[in-house]
Image (cartoon, rainbow, N blue to C red; front, top):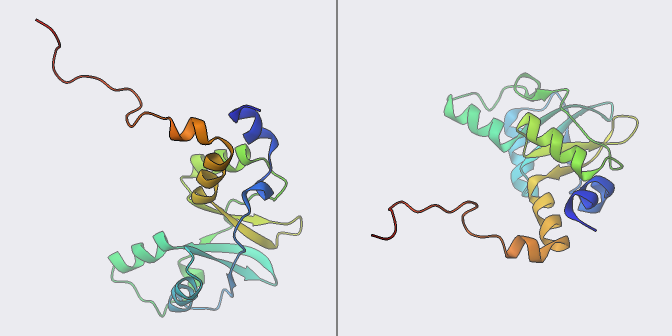
Length: 154
């Protein structure tokens, strides 16, 4: 099976996604950062009545730090509301496309009721590619299109 065919037929479930770690919208930014640190993860999902309402990532935390922000603020004021999500039955290609178009490194996986079931990350996708296509990945040249800086010859 070639790469494109695998990416379009294999589902997000094939990526062995990490479980979603959830917090309440009433939590603070400090609570979210502590949860991410304790679980050694790069994002938490925000749920109201078990339904996904937002996501908070390490990038969001860095933005807050850069602005000298308040870590006692409600997570609801800084989260990405209504994040783009996939289901475990969506193709890896669909997940990749949504991640590329939105510039996301992590994306929630939800069930048909909108409850988070996991997180798909670029890291998991890279591991999938290396596992399923090691020859193609390991044999890539260090530079995609090498060019010479100086003219060769006389």
